[in-house]
Amino acid sequence: TQLLEQSPQFLSIQEGENLTVYCNSSSVFSSLQWYRQEPGEGPVLLVTVVTGGEVKKLKRLTFQFGDARKDSSLHITAAQPGDTGLYLCAGYGAGSYQLTFGKGTKLSVIP
Amino acid sequence: ETGVTQTPRHLVMGMTNKKSLKCEQHLGHNAMYWYKQSAKKPLELMFVYNFKEQTENNSVPSRFSPECPNSSHLFLHLHTLQPEDSALYLCASSQGQQNYDGYTFGSGTRLTVV
Image (cartoon, rainbow over all chains, first blue to last red):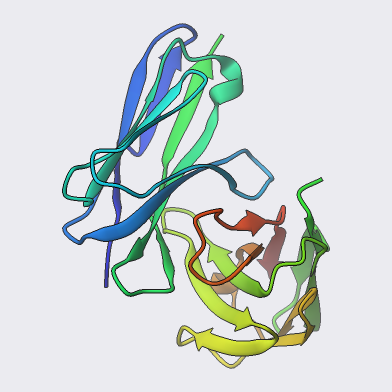
């Protein structure tokens, strides 16, 4: 079983602060995806990272895939209340067609 | 509009009832999935259909019965459920099973078993 551990589980910050959340595994993943889920809705894909060491930016969000493709991070600059939600990482293990999800980081950005 | 529509949004059912969850996608995707989302647990994959054929059944109890009549529609038939089956049930679709474009999820059905 390929597990994805996300940390922290919960994060509450003030508007304008920066934050980083992490997604770690002991297994290698061929790719990792990040989703955001708002209350009462399904997860929405933010980004896919494929290459070890890859960095992708989406406005104030920066995603990085570890060199060994076992971990990933999401950094948010100047957080806004609209960033509030559950951030999920998910990955395809090597040779696997099943997308494995982490438990998520629940982010609250206070105005 | 997510492209994946689930009905109903909320469902309360007794342990002896029979009900069905419906999922519909108009994205032209050929793979569809049922996931269970419970508090403090990762999303749990239940069933996978690829081109209408079931390709995964992750040891799901027989009180959950999926049906995929065509590539656009997916059902989850429920009978004699237990209170621990209360959860958010999410349907998703993708173009192929390993897809860098990711999954498109519906808004889910919040199921409460009483």
